[in-house]
Length: 119
Image 1: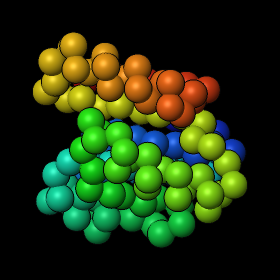
Image 2: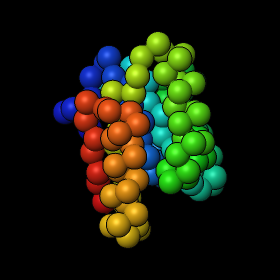
Image 3: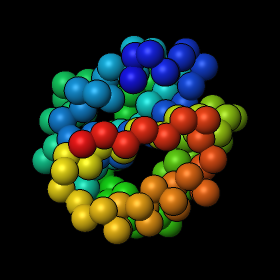
Image 4: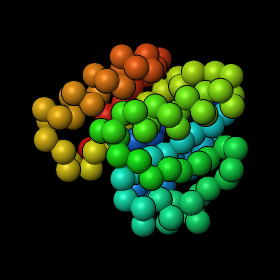
């Protein structure tokens, strides 16, 4: 993340868990939104790393694209800029088939300059 994120980037991190990687991305980017499907993890991330307007978190399931799209479009309007990078952290917890479907949707929907999958 540190090598490929720059100060002009608007970044989406999917599967942010407690926010550690999101905070690293936030040090290098204009803005980062970390999403996770677990409310408890989002609350931890917000307490540890949340910086409104720069590093933000939302409880969303990455597979529920309409809800994610609604939040991301609001971020894009706020910054007048599209998402430039997407990081997906699956923690080894997803089957490959649905994961690739999800990756394909994110790539087609956001057309990021970079999409990274880590486990």
